[in-house]
Length: 212
Ligand SMILES: Nc1ncnc2c1ncn2[C@@H]1O[C@H](COP(=O)(O)OP(=O)(O)OP(=O)(O)O)[C@@H](O)[C@H]1O
Ligand SMILES: [Mg+2]
Image 1 (cartoon, rainbow, N blue to C red):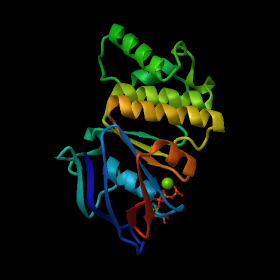
Image 2 (cartoon, helix red, strand yellow; image 1 turned 90 degrees about the horizontal axis):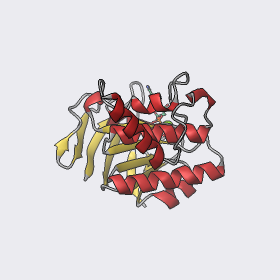
Image 3 (cartoon, rainbow, N blue to C red; image 1 turned 45 degrees about the horizontal axis):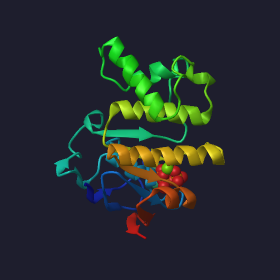
Image 4 (cartoon, helix red, strand yellow; image 1 turned 180 degrees about the vertical axis):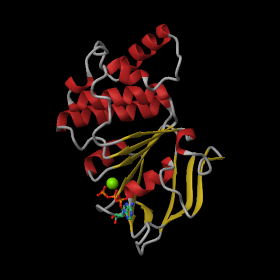
């Protein structure tokens, strides 16, 4: 279980103190919605370790994450438009998810397998700059697969996509979350995304999360 308890934070110069409480289960998508500026990205930044809370706990199956630096947290982050290295091939971008000095043959196998899982077999040599928005999001998901970290944070990941692509990638996130047992946290303004994907829904208002 992913358990965030009394995680408190104040942005410098802002009056509001956030106090976040929620739980997420393995293989489930937990949705966070709320008005623009309500603090959704702030919450993800705290979980990822880019912001430091004043107090509170982030626990994954009982282990404390809050004391770990960002790079040691078992977390992947996928944003609205993915930050691929545009001049590298899809395959090279995905291979960045693997530890340094992984053997070439293993890299090839794993990249092939991850591309297959996201429905993009055959594009490994294509330069990222020449991929469509939806293909880029799939490449980013493939990289996430190779990193194989149990917590996946998604901040409006489908916003830049057309309706059809959005549906396909949304379904893919659901399938991967279930099959890999990820704890997926989805920040989205879109009721559709939340309804289709989330097993648990929270609304963020006045610095507090409410189940609904
Ligand atoms: N570095 C910062 N310093 C001070 N205030 C900040 C900082 N970053 C964000 N804020 C403020 O904190 C509040 C929450 O911001 P946040 O980005 O978490 O909102 P959000 O819910 O993700 O909004 P959106 O839906 O527009 O992405 C906003 O009022 C914002 O202006
Ligand atoms: Mg935001």
